[in-house]
Image (tube, rainbow, N blue to C red; front, side, top):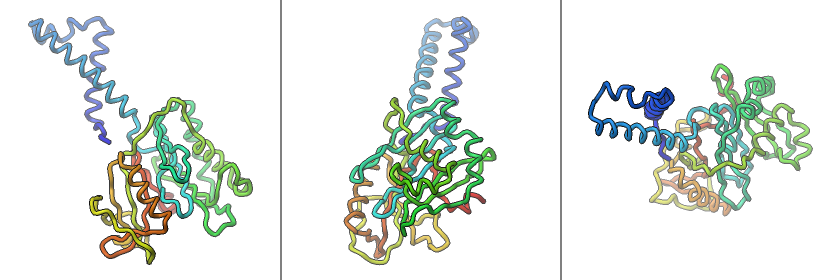
Length: 303
């Protein structure tokens, strides 16, 4: 998705502001124009240009909706295998823009929606006082008795603009009575607010990009990486136990999210791993949202 630069937005907004101020003061016909030029035809042309810029500014801002920047609060709910979706579930930005993933069946492609919340709603979701409580929690809680459990991660930015993150391992849906009872109330209440968020006036959101993440695997039935797809490249985001070649990333336009998700999901469910340049990989999908929020090791997030 094409993003308008902040400088260009400011320039257009400044033109719109000048025009608005001149109109309110009733000095449009005399302000600057009489001093700059006497020719009435040129004056009319300039007026039309300014009005056009004003309209363009409104159109640009309505498309962008202020979602640019770094999110204040993000939620991930990463299910256990065969889940392939490592995308954020919810993100709210300082502008009040919320981008969230709609609930979908296991065989459906997830869809994202975008809405704007009021300042009161924003404060209830991501106000400093509410987020401050999370800092008193442990880094991670295991609330499930299962060997493998889904990961629920809340990540936020402090008043000092530092990243913090807390994790609860275990299902937290309405039916997970035992696991919910074991989860700290400060985490659970915020999780519920984000996981259940929906807005009647929300519109469809297309991710800025989509990543296919390949992590080294040992063996299994294989499917070849499509030759017409972008070439996976080593990622800098590796753990201490990985080399750059063990974690590759291929980047696609966000408009291809559905296509890419279906391909990865179908092969994953069939038990097939990806063969690429003589190596084997497990594939995951991640939708890239504005500010590119990513899961971090909790110790790194709290550093």
